[in-house]
Image (cartoon, rainbow, N blue to C red; front, top):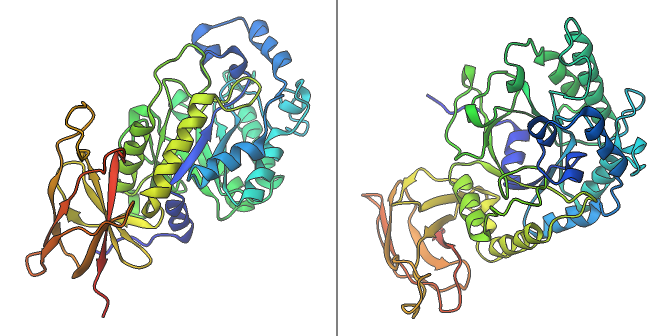
Amino acid sequence: MSSPEIPSRLARFESLAYGLFLHWGLYSCAERGEWYWQHRKPARADYLALFDRFDARDFDARAIVRRAKAAGMRYVCLTTRHHEGFSLFDTRGLNAFDAPHSPAGRDLVAEFSAACEAEGMGKFFYHTTIDWWHEAFDAPGRWQEYLDYLNASVEILATCYGRVDGFWFDGNWWRKDRDWREDALYEVVRRHQPEAIIVNNSSTGALGRVAHPMVDIATFEQGAPKAVAAAGGRYLARERCETFNSHWGVSSRDFSMKSPAEIIRILAECRRYGANLLLNIGPKPGGALPAYEAASLDVVGEWIRICGGSIYEGRPAPVLCRGEDFVLRDRGDGALHYFAHHLEITDNVHLHHGEPGRGLRTIQGELPTIGRVAWVDNGEELAFSQDVARGILTFDATAHPYGEQRVVRVARLEPVRC
């Protein structure tokens, strides 16, 4: 049975590999997470008082996008409207519950869009499908009125901000008994942005499930990606979205931060299974990135620069490795890249951060004849042996040099050129 054809827009998406998710809205002013209104249940009037505090005084879209780019990310996804119903874009008469009518007085999506275009970054718009603010959402007999409002909002995003690389919808899981009439929503996107990726998040309870034939991506919210099959055998790309801590929106009392090392491992795991990683940061009330998260992006970006350049054009190679190790095959030159986990550090026996992993690593499967194996970070050539007939290659994975710990170290296996 032949593999399904990969549409060009999905091939381009997979080469983006690593992106930044930004959750920012009125909830950011409370600094208690993005579901503050739902879980803390302040009175509507008290919650709407946050509107008068939303000034976006520190939001510099160009600086944020530039930082993401420097960190090795190739796309950014912004919450143009989250479940609270507040829009970062000019809703052009649909209502006044948006950033241009707030103290910010600006169309923040327009600024974000311009920044992505200036920096050559992928531009994705998150848009909720549920809405705690809009009175028609849960009002009896007004469901179609709400859907018309939702579709009109998406049409603004699809027509007023130039090229959009993807629309990231989220929320159908909130009201599973409703007829969401997804065809109409997705037709808005296809009519105006025919090459845009369409995402509708399956949420944490249904990792990888895709029900509608116009959805392009199987999502894995805070879960390890896996192979998925769509009805009719069509091809689906995959994406894991992941928080930096335990919330999507900024929470000043959340100390459960991921380390750069953990993010490197998650990114590697995603690429092992051919999935993208969309890593979230919740900007602070004024719109600036929190210091820890921003600095961590820089650290991971340095790892990509030194070790991880193959994450973009590398695709999973159908070979077997032990443990967490895996191999990517470069779509361009056909070279193999071995991602080695748990290597020890030379002369590090007096510390607890060395890992028992020095020694031989084996790959089994259909392999070309290899002429050279070397670490990507320093070019050190590694001794290896290969039995082409049996499909086995073994190489000596030397330890990290003292003073260096790559977390996941990458070796390049170059085929013999005829």
